[in-house]
Image 1 (spheres, rainbow, N blue to C red):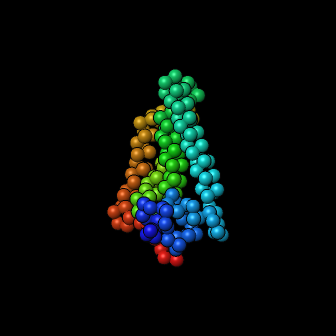
Image 2 (spheres, rainbow, N blue to C red):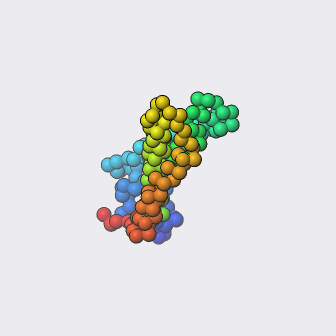
Image 3 (cartoon, helix red, strand yellow):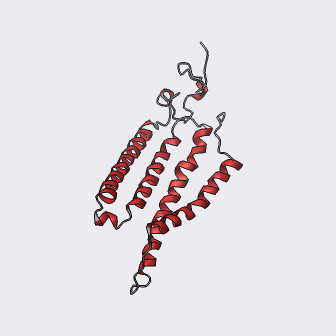
Length: 185
């Protein structure tokens, strides 16, 4: 038999150097549980289950907003800008999904996706909430006037605020793509 590294596809004969190496991945999950000082399996399972349940909750909220805000036009949901609630929920969903990019073997693709899956949704959530607060400020700044702030202006404000974050991540990927490498211990 041939001793393999965790990078290979054969998981039957993993080299002893990778025993208790601190990486939880499909290839050497079994050797992280036996005779090691730490057992991260329960933590990873708990984070995965909680994150999955929160993602399902986001999908259920998105369905609720779509039905009652967009299709049935309920006033309570309509007054909260249902399209921006949908963008907010999509940002939250992608942000939660970024947790799964940290699982498994360190790989250049997973490292490159982390800023896209975590950074941009976080900025998007902050921008959406800030734009909606700006809308409230503009409406109530002069209480005796009738002021409207359309959803299109709100969308334009969101797009304009997202462009710098998108440019930063694109430049980051062009200049210095995050990469993963196995380190000898």
